[in-house]
Length: 136
Ligand code: AMP
Ligand code: ZN
Image (cartoon, rainbow, N blue to C red; front, top):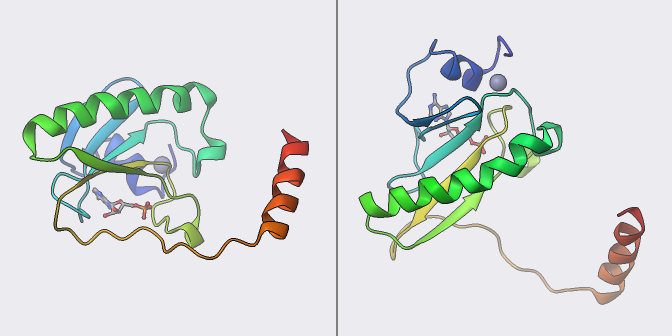
């Protein structure tokens, strides 16, 4: 628990939320400012700022839970397509410093925009690939 963390306060029931799921490890709730109708956040109860700090145990469970929740959401909202998004760090758009995963239903008309593709530079990308491969 981090005393300054809004999601820790929600987990601790100090701040209200629209919870849709809870178990020993995770809480899922409706996003207070949804990107689209039905936008859900899955929040591990363990306070970790970004993915790299979250335990492997919780990381290995969260996608399985995401699948379960998405399948339930599909029965309530009229969607088939969705984005699973997870921002790590301020430059990546993270505004709450407690790891969370966004489940965002997509509709034929919505205002979600992810990124714009750029031209590939083969010399840079092959060098990067080689450098990263050596570290794995
Ligand atoms: P991110 O920008 O990836 O850190 O996402 C943070 C998300 O948390 C945003 O989509 C916010 O709308 C959402 N959020 C912030 N405060 C609350 C809250 N009290 N209850 C539910 N969602 C929240
Ligand atoms: Zn926290």
